[in-house]
Image (cartoon, rainbow, N blue to C red; front, side, top):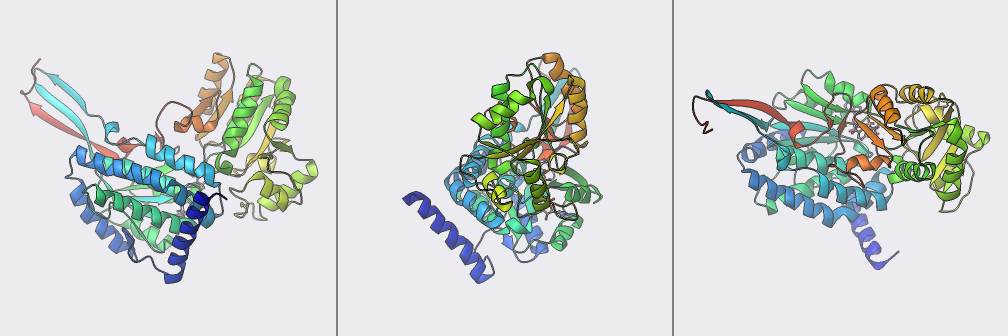
Length: 463
Ligand code: NAD
């Protein structure tokens, strides 16, 4: 460990310990014991934010970006240490990506018509106070990304985070409010409670002054917000297949797929979760994954042990395995490998539990198909109708088009690792809330605004 790494490690230990010892987080901005107090503080802050100029909002956002860079290492360490998931190096990259590529106020566009009868604008205004529920898998990334977009839109936000990531979330929310205060904005632009529970979540969801809910997580929470009777944005689960056809650059496909799959130990919902490969290139693909990309080929016996270890009797994921690296997962089934092993691979039927389940672990099962059409059908089946993310490696535009139409996902990466869709090695902006179920796709500031028409009759047209 270098001197710098040791310093970060010590800071993280101290922050986590101080939260543990006091049992409270006194002195942290935006953190309340009671959910109703948190919501009231957010309502007061929104009265200020909605009257800020766009330039003032941008100043707050710029401070959040800067502080995220400054704290990336600490928050990444906190996230891994609190949740036991992911890896610090990739989490640092995710925080920097969030800071750099989450859109701000520039994302909110005005539409205008002008003519003989005057001028009409559609301007995007704030909803007010937004209630956001965040996952354990990208806890701080989601909080930062949501906060930037929501504040850009003139809102404030109340978070009910995953209980397993509450300390990391509290640290992040404090940082966001410090940024706002430093930039001349109000305190409590983002708030939460010391102990988030289903009860605090219910208070937030039912509160009459919260008109919009944003849920990032599995199917349970998305269904909960969609049943709330309020407008809701639901960013739900995926199980993204990576399809490799017989025209692909197979060597590159192997590298891209393993890189995407192993990023932050497979925690991102968009990450490659299984492979569909055409028969004619399947052996070559597997060879490249093993010989050049640090993959361990699991025998049928090891696959069985993995199934029993990572999935419990009720068919649910063993939380101790989610977001763990390949080496740790293998050690849980009695296999010892070196640090060069990044991913576990095998070939199986599409119904194999390690293939059909959204594992969020660097385990990649490969399903072999005879024809392109069988591949499309298999990938669509494996995506389970989530309409979330899918990937393809192909040089044939007709094949790509056919696949894209059939799988109909919010994200489709062609000939690259999945994270290219988040603007990491690809064009476009970043988000950690991909609204697959409700159709907003990759959310950004404009997703958190409402359309307001403003008409001037018979004037202001100077054409
Ligand atoms: P999770 O569903 O266990 O928890 C997500 C959040 O929802 C947590 O804050 C949790 O406390 C809350 N929650 C769960 N059930 C709830 C209910 N019935 N009512 C109210 N709140 C509830 O998910 P997780 O393990 O934290 O995250 C992983 C899952 O989230 C994966 O399925 C992944 O695909 C998905 N995810 C999706 C996106 C996206 O942008 N679409 C992003 C990240 C994660």
